[in-house]
Image (cartoon, rainbow, N blue to C red; front, side, top):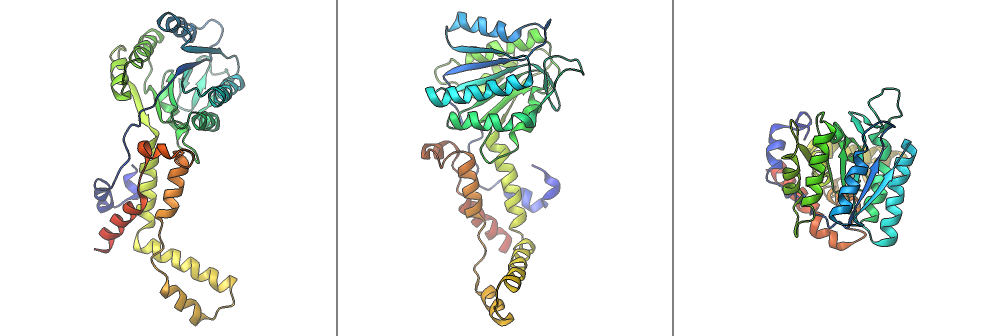
Length: 307
């Protein structure tokens, strides 16, 4: 939450407002491994796939990519397969990471795939999985992929998992093996799985970022700002100017109509955006995992601000 944009009282109010589940659990069917590593690099994606074949034959699908275009096409291929076969894969990316994206090596001359370039493919894959996509970025600073999760209109994933620091490839491989060992538990909880996987690495941990909380924090901040009396008055003023410019009403009629307006509700707009983002419009069952009553949130905000 960007506290600088909110007042102290608004920040305090947030704690009392309804919230979505912090982590919405997903039911996955298999692992879709994308390996993008240069010649001479250790094939950690292939090693992970071979290990998985020993654990559970046919559970993982291995995709070796040479260019960033192939990485993007592999994600698109996963979306098509998910749609055609009711597949819900964990998307696992093996590459070298940096704050702005991934590359096949640490060589600065190598091709770079920026996080923002995979936002749309991730959205397509998440739609195909009915909002069940988990993304694991097995790369140094893989947690920086959070930049790919900041845009709508559809959620790019349910959760992102990655490291927020440099980690050696052996430790990272041990951590990812533990992650997938635990994901086979009867009723796996993502938070527990990530904690267990982090215990296999030295010097850093896996981090988990649920997209629902990113979306909630951004939306609540916007709603709080737009619910301020000054903002509501500014919206009325904009409406006044439009009525003067676009209608033939007299000033008296315009002012009378503006005075008769009820408070301009924002909740309907936020509800539509939210339901679309988390695909409640596509499957009402997603209400149980992501549902949020924005009318109630707005009511509580306005009650406090007018009190």
